[in-house]
Image (tube, rainbow, N blue to C red):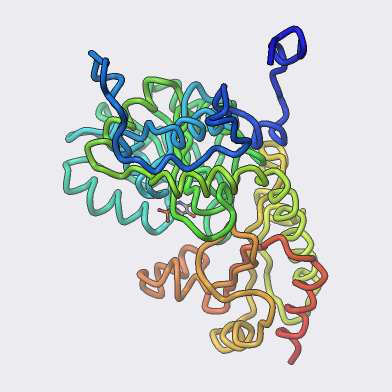
Length: 393
Ligand SMILES: *Cc1c(COP(=O)(O)O)cnc(C)c1O
């Protein structure tokens, strides 16, 4: 195919995320002409004639054709210089933190962290001689008093779990810039469709691609995106730790990503529809979703995000009421995790926050009757009817 037959091809540079999720980073020419990137399931690659270690391809070096397409596509979605896929969200978070922090450093982390991240920073980083200190992400004015000469980085999450609170990301970034700190955000709950944190000023965006990016609850994967040198540093750590994503999982992630924009639109709409339904229901005491006008961070979420995401939580008042509700659901699936096409329901008390004692849970607002919904992409009417019958006394 010559250029003069398709004069636009040379200059067509898609801007819309809806298009980029499908086409960005496609290898040119396409491998064997295939429209879909084939799975290149080869641990090692022909090295004959090469005189330079840079040319060495190996799955653990995350540089097979399946990795490279994803790296380019995810970089385009995050508006980043570079991106890296790794074996899980935790691998991405570990790579991000360990590529920046050394013994003696101090890191400020948001207080409502994903459980795996909390364990990583409290157990492993602490053991490596890295000082970890919490701050309330919605009270950025707390940062000043916590700053030390050794403070090196600041770590947040786009939306908190399960109360979907929104940190004051702009103030946090401004603080990080002012003091030369590396700023990182776990943007799993938002995805680039709802929020592009690098555009706002974060240095590194991290994702559990297990969730929305893949979207089908069938792989575990993670992403690091940001400036080229920072992503390369995270990639070096991951080569050493050995957390590469297998090419077959790369293939599934690439397939899942193509529908990310379509899926997120529906996740956003379904969660908001369910939240509005629950807010009117007499058996429900409180509903937490940033799309609701009475959510404490509604204004900030509206300013920062293009969509409020697929997660919501609500309180049915007691342990017994929550247990009964989950037992009665017929369409929604009772399971932890989120981001898949099927609606998942869980009780934070028994899943994400099971490791805390009752008082710690109370402090975080994790009541006995709290139920989290990760809205899937089913018809909202069916989801609401399911809740309606499950909540009927
Ligand atoms: C699931 C999740 C992780 C961990 O991701 P894995 O892919 O399970 O390793 C990290 N952060 C958030 C916000 C998550 O939801």
